[in-house]
Length: 242
Image (tube, rainbow, N blue to C red; front, side):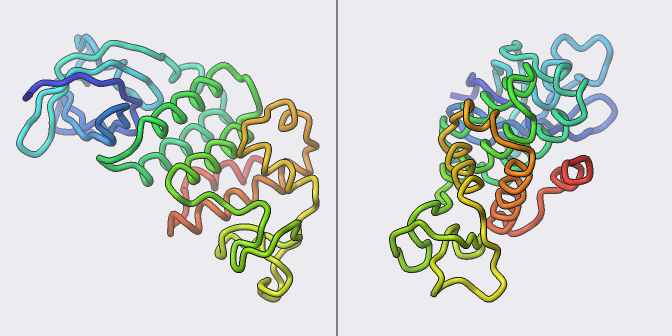
């Protein structure tokens, strides 16, 4: 059908002409979409505010030749204002939507959409530390994309753990025989925190010390950026405020 509806998270927008925008969205059923929202930059626009980054909307689109056209948008989750009011939440949310943009395509799964919506909702409500929400999101979305880090057996040879070295380039924890020279060793508590971030065990995550949280964040960032093949620009701002 030339017209269709879907739920979508707004990832980013670009200006087009004098009053239009190109909106990049991660939808629940159609994967990543790029569509033109006509007239949304005018003050009289009825749904311009619903098509801003971090917002979740029920959108109706018309299939165009190159880009689809947004015909309607109804708000499902107005998270933008609460996120933008706090710098740590804002930078974490930017890193999340940037990662979602990199990993998503037309075949993106509903689980990727739901994971991002849940992360943005938690950020807007301040349910947990912003960096911990981001770290949990990064580990879980990487797993959904087929890049789950090995946090038990050796990622290289499969030797049963526990192991002490984490090498993101090799896929996670590695045994002593497969550890490159100078590879970092991580504490047992840091490894336990990584497992909790992957599983969403927030009682453990919230109770971790700042040292453990910082160590886990560094490993998560290095792992994600290695597999994405280029840096997540928003992470640089988070590192600068730690």
